[in-house]
Length: 337
Ligand SMILES: NC(=O)c1ccc[n+]([C@@H]2O[C@H](COP(=O)([O-])OP(=O)(O)OC[C@H]3O[C@@H](n4cnc5c(N)ncnc54)[C@H](OP(=O)(O)O)[C@@H]3O)[C@@H](O)[C@H]2O)c1
Image (cartoon, rainbow, N blue to C red; front, top):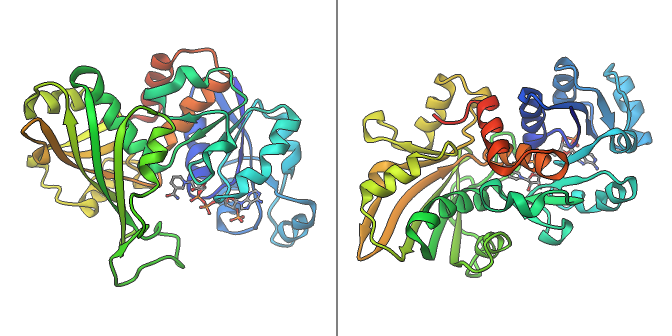
């Protein structure tokens, strides 16, 4: 069994914890956070040993009647691998601690690429990450782009990608984020950082991205235009995308016209927290004009990186290859709608 410690038990950390618990070859040995809020209570209810970020925070947990198992340093020492899911920038502050303890670490996409030895998406570079001391699971948007491009590249060849990312303003729980009633070019300076982030995994790809932020919390939506270097019909592309369990083709008959119905569909399907781990690609949007492929996909920002974190754990400290790991993750979580 791989003993996994999870530093940061928020949007990503709590989902990774449950996903670890669902796997046959790993277990959660503790989760860590700073404040004794409802998520701390939820961690205790799920029987995850709860660690506190520092000594001076223990009193607050005691006062709230929330039992704790120790300080995060102890969790780092006793774990076979740490998944860092602290807020952007905090992971980099812990990087030295992980290194000193000799505990391999997985960071998230909010950290700069140089926080880890390698940026990671399972379908693209699992082998590169094997046995490394650290890996960074790229952001939700980057993960969604890499998965799609990789699936298309092998049979058809991807020459060039241009993508417009319509991004949610914040997660449902991020009450301080916006915009509330606006449409923001974001970042205003072009192109956006997402293309370079994809290139941390696919360095030779010609990709340019632009981003906007809109008053939504549910999902991101990407409008893509992809130059293929071989002839492909929309039917062939649909078949290829349909073959991957991490891509979900939304068929016309489903009557799903946007992110709201996608989330409703996920809840009806019994998905925990209404999560959609897969890229959701509208089959009807797939069109080819003069060798250029066009499509729309929606990305559930809170959950698409979760299976990638599980595969990153196996890449760093497990003993199985890329294909086996992804199959195990998909099976245990129930990917493939
Ligand atoms: N949310 C998304 O849509 C999304 C998608 C992909 C990637 N990511 C990336 O994933 C990472 C985590 O994001 P998130 O959205 O999950 O953040 P989040 O919801 O704010 O959760 C962060 C967690 O870290 C804890 N924390 C804060 N400071 C800490 C410290 N010094 N030591 C230990 N724990 C600490 C927080 O605990 P307290 O609440 O107790 O302070 C909270 O449990 C970021 O790099 C982000 O960019 C996020």
